[in-house]
Length: 440
Image (cartoon, rainbow, N blue to C red; front, side, top):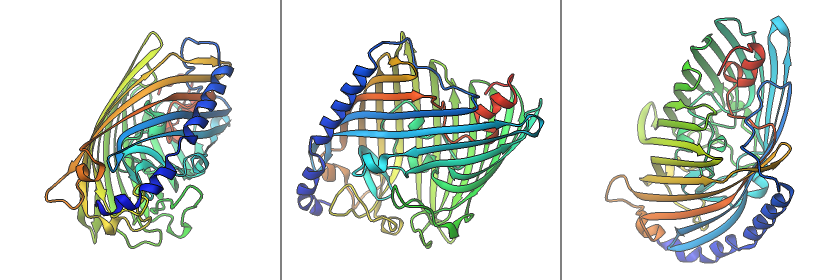
């Protein structure tokens, strides 16, 4: 794997010029001038309003060493820029109709990807890829919420009922390596859900969707493949601040839009405590089997735990993860792989052990705007899952452990969601409107 390193030196230099850092600093300074008054804490997500609109974005500078080929890279980003909205029409005894949408502008601000050791997917590796412009566009019809049951039907593009919350709505800026093991997102889908119980409840969801992954931030799904994949999730809510889920998904040939690549059979289970309180804890396990003719060819496992505590408006969070990542051939740009053919080019599996710590300062704000400065440190250790190996991380990166420091500020304006990708009976807004006494 060393042969492409020297050939890519000039390409890497062009992609890591300090101009982006300057842009981020100017953006952060402008926001700081606008948001000059300290506040007690971030306003929690508003729940139950008929109309909601919110903006989020993160300005950050990341320094990683070694990022690749024994080189330190320092880059600036405007990451996770999103415009989020929702409209809910309450219709009394006939139920409610809710439309949820999210526009993600990373296709404009993050085309080169974001330095993120271990991360992979959609043609990027060791960089997080930009999400699609239409990140979410879902419509949900829900029955009223009587004392013990509720049903809903949702359709559109969004998060399938599989796995755990999108990392974008969690504490950390850097994504976990297991993103593609633990979530299946940006799919055209139809899903139904039924909820039984009130203060203690069980929810069963089932959805059908297109298996192909997006080829880029401005590409759409292959409509002829709608319905070739499916997923089911069971969620138990024994009390308001505890949630357990288990889910299984069959994803038809995500690696090739036209079909014909390995199918993925994915499993996820997680336990979540804390809701929107000052102290939260979350643990998950996920597995992806890449199959051919119903036989597992590759298996990738993941375990992750993260927690957060707040004290006097300061927030401290930590995450530990162990995840298996497939390795394939890279392009001249060593942060890129061949899109659409990754499955059939797998030459080995790397096991990533990643520890992340984040310290967030008290928020500053004016009106509905909130700016939260943060510092995030990551240590990512990589080694082949089995030896001998074609891909040896120590040789490729220049060290077995990669370190990174990210400093920046998170901006929220307007109504922010506590969670993303929960539709119908699991949507806190629908639950609050339809049953004011119900607690999620």
